[in-house]
Image 1 (cartoon, helix red, strand yellow):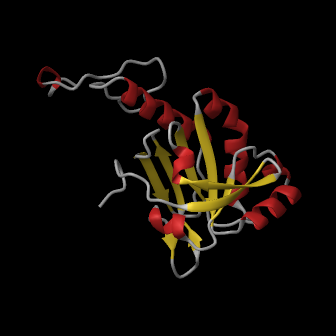
Image 2 (image 1 turned 120 degrees about the horizontal axis):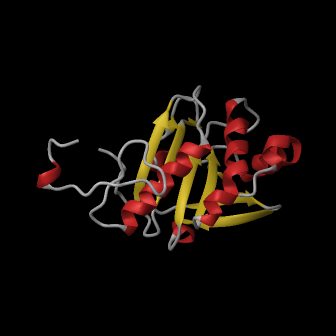
Length: 187
């Protein structure tokens, strides 16, 4: 069963955000688009490149009214230590959620049980708390924030324009499609 169009499960977690520890729950997400970016662990190799890429694109997500959250099975204390010691992570201005019990990782079905780490999972959540985009892949493959940004824009467009769909490689301002009987076989 896919998590697409399912509502996120209740959670309570602590994040490191802008020099403070903050408590978050599923209610914290309500009313805004959110992106959850699960990664295996702090103080690793691919992870800081991804989080830095997200940090470099964070202003674009904010312009869209989208909150970004990085999540690993490390604690919020480890997130602070990483932030204090890594030039890449110092750029991060979005919350880094600690998931030491693995509850969030299990809720989003990205937990690698035998390792106690999360797969690289990306989830776009609408303001009502429903998952609209998900991508999960091997931990050796880093993600691209600009592609995630494109997917967020497409998800928002489809939500704001019922009856419209975004074709492959759709970018903001490009033509969309209106599925209908007349369109069948003409693409």
